[in-house]
View 1 (cartoon, rainbow, N blue to C red):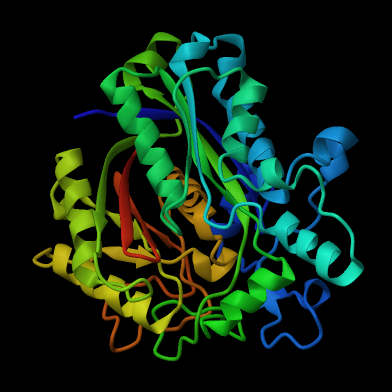
View 2 (view 1 turned 180 degrees about the vertical axis):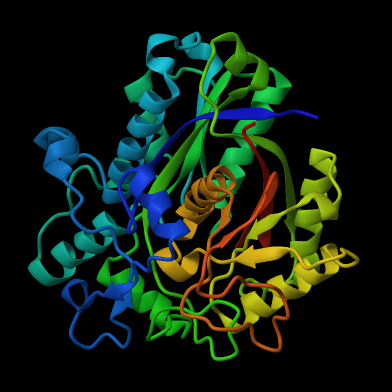
Length: 402
């Protein structure tokens, strides 16, 4: 069984732009979802979400660099800088060809695309000459590799809302295979361009009020955004250099539903969770907490609850579950990375974060969703689920650092 030590963490989110403030927010049930009417056109049906407010572009980048990076790449670079500094590897970096980067994104450079269309269609101007490199899905990966000098295997991953979890698991597996010693992995998305919000609203999946995952009266998801980055290395590599460890990635599972593009399938979700347990060498009874995908849509939550009940049936007590999307919204391709950080924070603090805005689970979601109030409890292993449109599923299992 391969185990990766997580030695660095970084985050840019609606609930905090560094790890400590983010962890405090999600562990205390602080909801970052609020009014976004200043970011939308006047006739938008839904005007709430969880954007990253007060992101200091000028404080993080010189003018030339900022002008060459879409917002999703800016988020990723800042989160990666935090994680790299946190890991201590700047003073003990591996050989460049043994250092890899994997970043997931679903939306990619939607901000500059939206702005470019407006320049062309409404103003008759040419698009920004950096439009192509700014919108590439691998732009965050390449920026991070440039900043830390990574010359090993690197990837830009796009698998909808499972993108970040796929990137993290890919890094873990490539370390185990011997192709790299260290991986910088995570996800990023910037989601509050007007065109993107309108596209989502046309699906009628955006809730007009803060999302209520697993509740009987849930009405859809709340949009979020941000980036999170984990530094992964083998447990032995981390021990040799005496690194601090935030936790361990001990297993992961992947599956594909092979059915509808928008219709979630509980069997595929269950398969990802079972595969993660098998990969980690654990039983269902070993999992103390699940950070659910929990978007707040009727179909997704019903399918995920059914999958959890299927996989974790027969336990003496229900497994504790919560959706941190109830606080930070759905950050699309970044969600798996933000929720990995939330899961690690829960393990460290021995507190299960709550599902806020919800007093009880609905009858079609009969699971323990930790409503409203964080719950202290002993936890060694926790699972984090990520399920994307098109039926791309991932489940990661983390172990508390002892």
